[in-house]
Amino acid sequence: MTKPEFSIPGLDATLFDASEWPLVYGRFPELNEPDRVSRILDSLDAILALKQAFVMAWIPPSHDHDDEPHEDEKRSVVWIKQRKADLRQHCRGYLYITAEPALRALLEGRLETVKKMYGFPMVVVEDRTVARGQAKSFLQLHGIRNPRARS
Image (cartoon, rainbow, N blue to C red; front, side, top):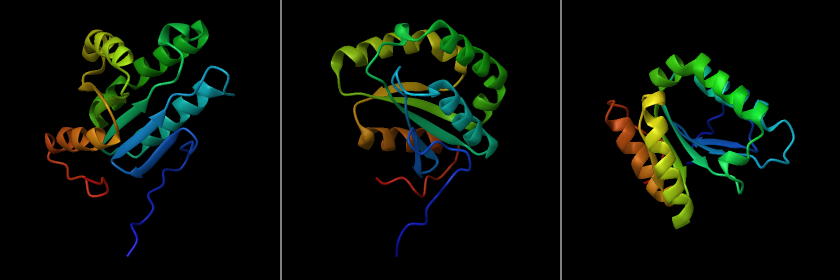
């Protein structure tokens, strides 16, 4: 028997993988990818439109956050402010996946600053296996089973 597909209308399949719902993997696009900010924000809107609990596992791009164009950063900040209540209601945590020690340290330092703004846990993990376990923990804290995530 195969696992039923889980799809989210409006989700950009080149950037997001919801096959382990309520764990969603998102890949931050590179600076040269077309319409990158709209693709991320529209996909996040599609996830939030489900009005269900989820955990987001982010795969960082090769560029540093500080390299983001000002207009892209500004647009993302406005989006976050407009949807902060929805994010807090439905998102059970953000995970950032990287095995690179320097990037892990950089992300962990930055997360300490932004955790309070988001209102949900944010953790850096080394791979998808650890991400699955951490997502289960975040969901279980809220009494949510995670039937699709592999252990």
